[in-house]
Length: 238
Image (cartoon, rainbow, N blue to C red; front, side):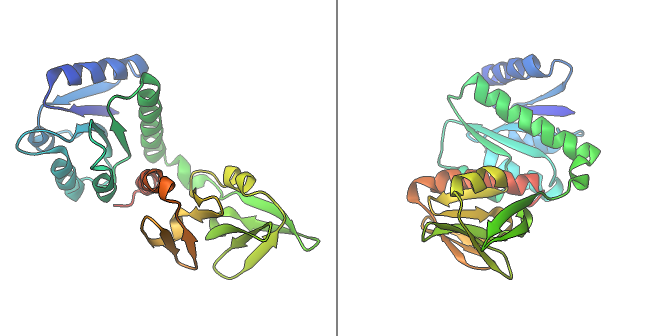
């Protein structure tokens, strides 16, 4: 595993390298003081911490060029600006770290990135079976595959699960379904839980799915975009 740090400031490269060594002392580190150095690298890194504000070739343009030849590199932006988070989504970034961030947050992001790299390398994810959910509706026990859920909503004190070909109502709590569903879903609104896999388009007020539409709470929009970005990166989508 090769971890790269691209930042035009030497002190930043040194700080990040010390943090990485604390967690992975045996890891191979590569340092780049410009985006062009990354593009010219003979052996590109598997995971790259990439600054955005750099002279000549900034981090976002560097990422776009990298993606043309390397769709699997795990990109983690490190910046003092929040304004580029939506562009980071376009280049399939794994995460977007905004300075200042805590050591705990850095180690959490790095740990998840390494975990994804190892899963890709060993192919562990390919053998996982999709989980099922057992619910009771109208006196019947029904097994629902979580991957088949397009979205769920709260309606008239019930949870309504929408799949591509059916709607299932049952008495339950949305927060329990949210916890069971995992990180492939997002609670975009207190009354809606959406499956990332079925999203067709979205804006700050709504999410359009392959079947149906869900509301977006304004205060959730930014975190939704970050979560969707991470989901697409896990799935290897551009």
